[in-house]
Image 1 (cartoon, one colour):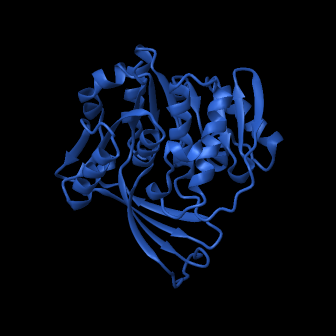
Image 2: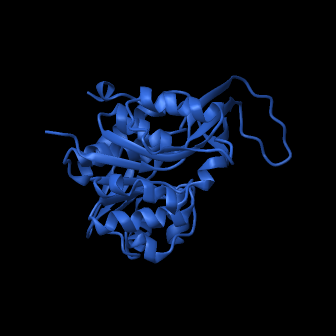
Length: 301
């Protein structure tokens, strides 16, 4: 039996990471420690997570025609990701992300989108057959919204399940949200979408209800060390996680989303898929780096 097909549309960046004792406030200079340069971007991280966890994944993205872009394409191929629609842009550089991580594993990130910002509906048209033949389409918000809206229209016409990770936080129209089958915001993103301040399970439930009322049947709010709040149709479920010492939370959300799609593609019910995603993300936060911290399937057995 062939694996169900997952398509990821999203960003590909090179992450430049500095570790420091604390994150700087405006105007402050902090002397950091180790510096690392790694492949990243939310789309790339999620595609890698899917592949490492056993999924069949194709990645639609745009890189610059530069060293970073060429290295990214080679890496995707090594990770067993279909690169037929990793497009090269001669007019824009590859995306980069500047990341600071403090001693508690918290991070702050600034992204220069580069070629990611040039991913267009015309590029999506080139991959129309791939999207229409997919079982799951996974997207984030580091590429132009009009491009994602167009891809969602194509997916919905063919009844492809659409999973949206609304990161970074942004205003999204109800017409767009109505085409989403599963939305996976973190606490901050859920607060932006709902207008509810989330500080416990009850407020998370209220936020999920407001988000669901926009036309989304399934809402998963990730709450870091607490776990995830799931609204599935009319039911609410708290899915806690084991207590873990976080070293670096970078890419934990991306690992969660990738793992969720793998489990769903394998036919797992939504709550079991969330448990699998929690477990995978829990491994990610015990390691430094973004893509380098994403686990393989064998580590979850």
